[in-house]
Length: 91
Length: 136
Image 1 (cartoon, one colour):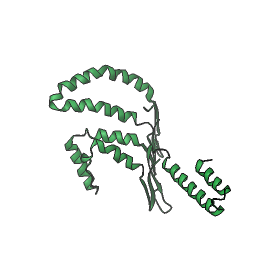
Image 2 (cartoon, one colour; image 1 turned 135 degrees about the vertical axis):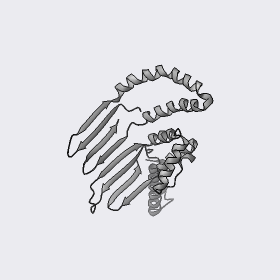
Image 3 (tube, one colour; image 1 turned 90 degrees about the vertical axis):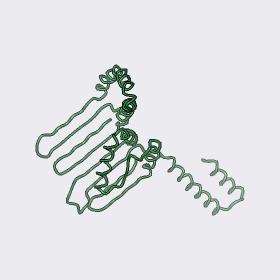
Image 4 (cartoon, chains in turn brown, red; image 1 turned 45 degrees about the vertical axis):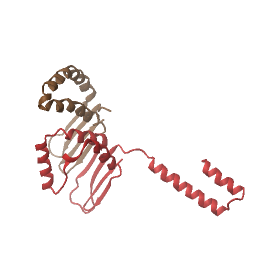
């Protein structure tokens, strides 16, 4: 499932703390129509660059890239050190 | 009650087997079903890496990482788009760290098998820090 929210936090024992809660579902709502609109252009570029061999890479890169984003849901990183704490959580 | 268990009890009431034999058969049956339920457990979805300080450790750093196995699959597929000269540099850097691995040789058809084998992976290292790597 595509990640819908992201929590990012950097907590320092000395200095400023940084917390971010990002509603990714709103970002997808903006980006997905843009990608759909740009996809014919990408296809055209891929066709133009096909003889050089780069067209194939461009064409295959996007599905794999979207799959990578799609699979990020559930990623959790939590690091606690002497100097502070870092966490990243994608739900 | 399962069919096998019923049959064993019926054989006992009919006098075909004695109590000891019935007990032995029932225990064997429960072991078999226990093993089967272990194997049919949920397919692991995440690779978990945990580093915790041991009692003698001065370093109190803790690491808790949970990576979806699907993300590893997708990441390895994306890695195939890295130019060959860059992959060479990655291999050189790994070689310097003492890791002899050539990721350019991993074919897409072998990826599923590779990640599938991670399901059985369990690493426990207990020194100053406790390192655990497992799938859940």
